[in-house]
Length: 333
Image (cartoon, rainbow, N blue to C red; front, side):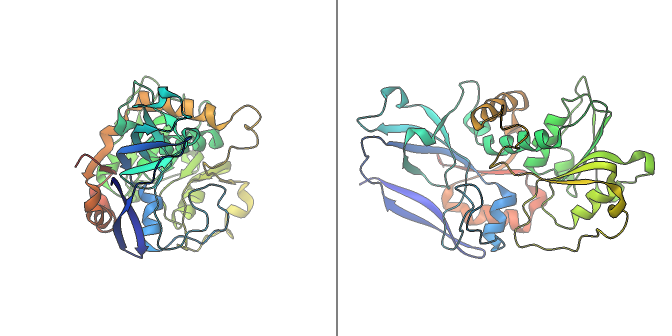
């Protein structure tokens, strides 16, 4: 009998690979064999460390009502190996993306799958949810011609967001990260804009250097204070980090009170009401696919692990994040 191997988080810093029989397909289902899946480090490390909040409804089907043990993940690329009798034969052998936990095989209905364009590699397709997030962040920030923009955090979300921003006719774009590997990852010298990457201690601002638009994508609650301090009068701060249960004191009692700075909560599970009359998830996915084709983010994969070595992957991200950018599971190993 064919079996599926699935990663489960069982307690803080503990996980196991569980093997289960693959059920017989229903007539409207397909069996997907996974090629690769990406670890979304910012979110998954909250799960790994036990720092996730227990939200009854997180406005998505991934982060609601989380409790151990749980299979978690949402960046899975595979190929359809079997189809039910009612499924169109065109689905057979098609490469697909799924918001699916890390697993070697899974059964689902075609309506929950997204066909992968032929122009993208399977590894680049793993970045779809993060690119959709980056598109959403940029749309929520709505950069304006000639603005000065700052991105705090150069993990994958920060790198993708900065890559999109570098396509805009901004006056300047500055990125900040504490890890040299990530600061050096975005070497953008487009026709429109050169990105300046700095360590946190190297950011020095005068009144005239303050940023019109700041993205807080570091995952650190304390960085929100920096984001506010670096943003000019009547500027915007887009908060894309999910802090989970991490806490920090935020100073809103000083200059912020008179600054008219807008703090914008941005999360990809919904579309801004200002855009939802014209944009839906399908249109945003199309935009994300095209952005992935331009940016080719698989160059930022620093580590590939077999699923049975998942403990080593999360230990690396937990103890030595400075050595990583994107970590994926390769199911051919």
